[in-house]
Image (tube, rainbow, N blue to C red):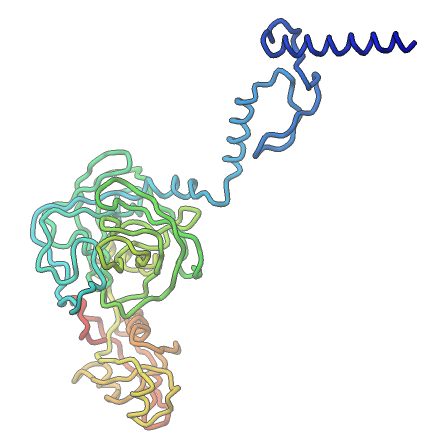
Length: 414
């Protein structure tokens, strides 16, 4: 019996060795459905990135691996923004301007060796920009309206847009608003891929965003980052400032392009960068889409943006100023340092030295907030101002006038 068992064992060993040799060097000699180590219908080990599944012995492993990767792509990686880029990229175009000599900024550049805020088409304070410029714009309607920055097209003799599909179309300016640095263009085309609008009002610091544009004229480029800060103001770029700050790489040529969320919805118009070299240093600024839509609607409807104005010169209330006018250092509000003669505020009884604490029931704690609240008031309407004067609160009714059209300046009245 023992000899019989030994003979059987040797025969099985030889048979397995023969099958192994044939499977290695002559697999086509073996019957279909046979392979070493796996019987027909047995469960094979799962591939990386794929769910465990039963694999036939004759399965093509490279093909199955490709299918598994495709399945993973369909499910979507948490680190991939491909879907957002596909949705938003067709609506972002390049803008080519020619002719004319365009002023970038009328204010002198800050002194020192480190440049501060630079526009996309030259350093702040350069006397003139070359007559050919490159920027970006966003298609906001299928019938050819586009939103971009005013400084992209300002003073241009000819404006041409290059669509994502390669088409080049002549554009005309519908209207421009230097105080918010926004402009609306129009091309004669139908069925254009328009952007979907998001809600910049619900943005939070840390939200992921993408910047899309044509930096350095290398072609459409998508960069990613997060929202670094909200409501940035006091930068000296525009009269009306409430920027979204992002660390998504923004460079010259991105100006007028789109800042979108992870669903490809428009959150802002890329406008400016902080840079010591002219390139991205992780601090970029975009105009919120809520502001952009308001300006865009006014420009399309009337060719101008209508804003409220009361004729005061405000200043942020610091603890030092509060002490000098003998009020509590923690008082919140905006100090009025000047009132225009015969202006709406003067006629309502506002005086230099008053502290504005509320406009129309909305609390204001900075000149930027005061400016935005007053600008949002309809001309010819009446608004209540709550003032702090000589230590006591008083309310005055002011008849709002229409804000005069002007270039942005650090000395503009409000």
